[in-house]
Image (cartoon, rainbow, N blue to C red):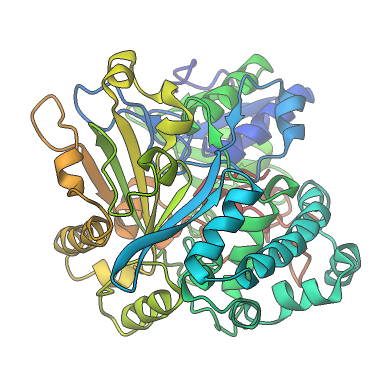
Length: 514
């Protein structure tokens, strides 16, 4: 959304917020509603950061969530408090995972009711055991979600306080102490089922199931606690509908929001700070009691001149597509409108994920790159123009795993093309027609498909190393140096309010946490 103001209305504010992403806009709205004078400085020509809706294909009326794309960690309290005109829709199907067994195409459809899901498990695995294990496992994570999610808008609990709140030693050990691979292998036998469970631990996180750092556990935790249920919902109107609503709420409360204003330096004595910013017309300075940095820890260090943090690294391929029609599946027992309605897992068997990680860790592109696809237009057709809806057009968002930024450093464009080709080949293996035959074309006759590597995300959005969480995710409890809320920095009046704050990183993939 363009800024209403072309330049700051004042030189002095109670708070200056560097960056107009979703977390910065939430902070601006709350502070302005509390009577504080607020200035938001946004480098780009629009607010929203990675949570934006754009029309990436020339002459095509399709408004895609270009970067982040689902909502899970947005507390309903924020929507209520700020009076946001914003809604989400629940996906009827949780996931579909195609696979070939005994030479025949089949798959696992999760959703459509308890009976249907149970029968899908039985057809795939030949018995009742895996579904019973699935129910027990996610009943456990559901209980944890109900206890942990409310803490995200409270001061950081200590580790022991959170452990007491969870009040389940088996769950605590499974999620907080042992590599998640231990629980997956203990509880499930089927390779495909194991892989589906593991994927939530790997979104944007380059790790093996048994990584002793437990970064995969932290990723898994944030993916299963959202909303107290773990459900991931589709934002009506795309992610930009959320950030547009937040910007409107902040402005209506009195915040000044200016785009095309890049903060380049923060000088502070701990009581008063000066933020130097650059525009097309020159430099300016805004003075404030507090500065909130809605950017990565790397950008914070650049602004303050402090020692930079350990370099971060992203590990995903993001692909946006517009289709003339959904492709037919080799597994003819499943309607494509159901298969693509939830998360469509590709090459994400447990052993496949392990092999892909090992190859990438060795410096090679995975021979069988894992990924997953979401068709948001099935749940929210409002992101497409009426003519496209009438013609049966659909959007696809693909998120590839185990592709760390280091793999693209030799030649980003060439490696992106190579990876995109092999990733789509894995999708084609489960289709009755090539995905290329289903792609729409833009006004200039080009296929409607775009791909973003971690290096592209660093260049476009300044995500450090393309890491969607800005750094490795942190546990949602206090540790040495985290402070009361996890937003504190070495400067008393400079706070971090982006994904790099403790508990902030879950927003990188599409959820939102203030």
